[in-house]
Length: 332
Image 1 (cartoon, helix red, strand yellow):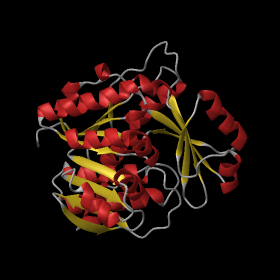
Image 2: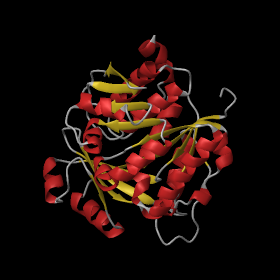
Image 3: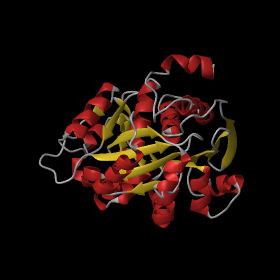
Image 4: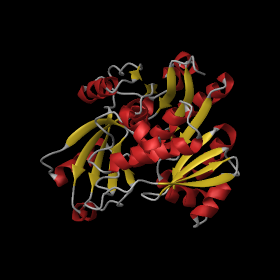
């Protein structure tokens, strides 16, 4: 696949992240599930912003798959991203942000849309845990007809986020991308994204993994919920029975790589975690860069671990600089 233009064709919810550092009491006062993600209306999300009354919010062109795609580019790779925004200020901000990162963003903003561009208020507490308040907005209007499969054909791998499952049309777009990938002989990758998705769509995810997925990304909590067992080692063994290649992240201790039934542990990098927003996304980006650029699976996992360690050591869901020059130092 050396002649392919793009390393990865990504599909996800196009969401503007609104980032704030808060105390634990704010999460309690807002009656939010700490560490989780809550879907909200525009009004509910506005109430959260009013109640935190934060003087120094920051913004980013976010969404889980978008963060992964940016990490691929910051590793030295290439990517094309599919997401839906409205023709509003946030939509223009989002498109510019993705293009400035070096990604191909080709779906035009929706004109005269009833919904606004999606947004997520990300509240990070002093223990580096993040709690998300998300209004999906126009991102739920992503249709399979929006997708350019000519661009997919020019890619080595396709990647979808689990959050697409929250609405019918993005769900169809996800499945259509997987089906077209299989027709074209392109590897497929999927991220579970969040434990609450396992709770709601676990059986559907099992069918999706079985029918379409070559590569699966999940964290330890998602794996436990998905399989109904507590031991991470038992999770790794069971995951190996349903997917050829699986990466299970386990916080600062690193990750498990399950390949064709074999299990290996790849150690993490010791850093002080300040903000865990985007850690799993950046891990997936590092791994996908490696897999589409000739790394073996363990080397790809090590690069993913390193990338995630750099992200959690600062505020925000992604880095502001490339790590391409660090590959020799980290990987030898």
